[in-house]
Image 1 (cartoon, rainbow, N blue to C red):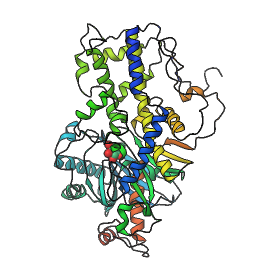
Image 2: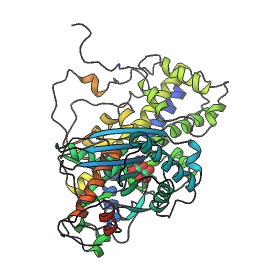
Image 3: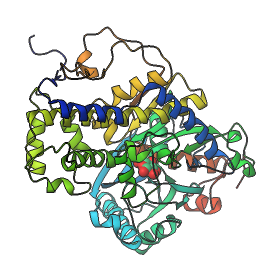
Image 4: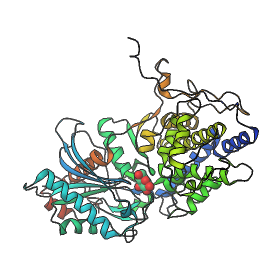
Length: 532
Ligand code: BGC
């Protein structure tokens, strides 16, 4: 039937034909600044591998490589009812997850609470009170009058948290624009539990987890080829399973060398020494003006929180530069407000299907009171592509580094986060970069060939989905796929795995196993590993 085929993403050919020479020069400069070659990606990946190793060493390095005390993959037969709490960048989500007898199945009910913006720069007390109030509301709404005993909770707190125990953790530093006083350097669990106790909320924390660890575990629950969990969102990071024998900084714990330990890499901190990343002057400004200069260097080039800001800084520079002066004669004051443009602004530009970039023009008018000329619109579009492509290509280095280090090919990588899920072409660009880094040979068709130099027609701009008529291709040796819900199902599974291993006598990384046994009414079955 006509019109019933697979939906083809609109593509735009674009043209630099009417871009004047001077502006074309600027486009070329930006292309030079923001393009990362395959060779450079390989160099970054190699350095990444040595930094991952360094992070596991006793001396440590830039990348924290945090042992999380998640010591096994789920087998699909975990059961029980658990709460999961996810403190994300914009929302607080509370879930009740039921893991039934059936392998790999789960049921979930959930509520979302908006995190008030002022909380992000408020006080620790306000933060814990807010979270406890939301939990209380959730329990009252779903279980009014019921005697719940103590419900085990998996708390996804997605920041660099040093974990000597799975149920405790010290926040090293805030990331993603948070700046709440009195939490850094402190164990986050006691004040959180105190706020719950104050309200008489019948919940006990069983595991404190990172979103990446949750993502890896939840994804593995339904697909055992999933070996890495990644987030490409407001922040960026990954987790994978390491052998305890390959973690020198845990040697003193004398864990069986072949037992597993999930590592929260916290690789947003990669290259804080600034040895390999091709930072532009705009990246330097993003860093200097952030609440934590010198931290999260990798994250600041690729994560959603920063993409719009990098774009804004470039556009502002081109408006102010006397040799360029885009938006000549217009008031570009609105462009001066830091963080006024977010990654969705860039996404919308990249998604504009019209040859004359009318949607982009309208976006600039509604958001910034600006009316870019057609050539300026071409520059704007190209800049968005360059920033989005650089982010996807650099992101691939972290994934490639883990795959190479652990010799994981073939494997699946579970990915989540707003950039991965919503940013146009992110997946295809990342896959292309992985192909270049890991030497899989040429792709069937390049996703984004470089623009024709000096004007003329632009290369075709399609998307993976516009190639629907191509014959099915062999899967890549490393496939980055949409993950299962890490901070809901993943957190619940980790709580379940923790209780399961306490029951089996593996109490490594549990602060007070006796208390846990009592609290959750668990009978210990046998003692296998008993390292604390
Ligand atoms: C945090 C990580 C987190 C990542 C993705 C980073 O800013 O430090 O803990 O996994 O964002 O949410």
